[in-house]
Image 1 (cartoon, rainbow, N blue to C red):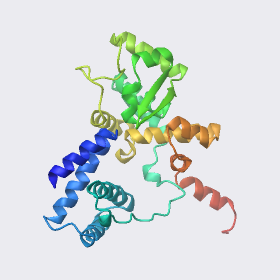
Image 2: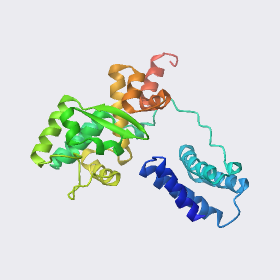
Image 3: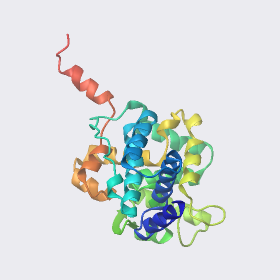
Image 4: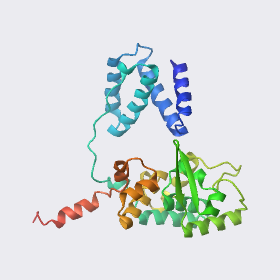
Length: 274
């Protein structure tokens, strides 16, 4: 069965699934097989595993793991093993403990400046100033900076991401001082593009000095902050969906949700509780 897992992961690569997705799917499928302990694969076993997941994980995480498993079952030609994902009523707001505010983001930039870590400061500004995914950072190249736009190729789609004037100026200066003449802007000492784990660790190292909770500081939260700030000014969710590369506006709506602080203020303003 482990050989079939390898074949499936190879299939996902051919389907142009990202490396992060392939790693996650492999991890989730192998975890299920460990749970199965060599038993015959049956729907009853899959349902017991679903219950096991629900006892240990949040609903959203359970659905992610079930998606990996259902995909594998379909690959095996065992549609009978597929289990339904949990139905989750979407919250109309974000938990406040997870929302990265603009003020907190600015404190992260200042912490990076104080540490004299120009690369990290500019990296944060690039992700947050364009709304790109961390996996798309490699498309911010010297050539893209020169053109003022980057062509993002992901999942068989191409979209153009604009680089604003101020960001472009800062990147050009960084490239000049670093004597970087071609390829990705943000690289390791060996010249390889920074990967997700590098960036994650670098960002977390700023939390204490910036006075920002660690659970708020990760690359994708910068993308969410970009979306909220853009929507606050533009109010065009369709345009924002195009910029973020979303095929569904419903996905974009998740990005522009505010924390529960704003709904509470509006509820108090109704004057219905004296």
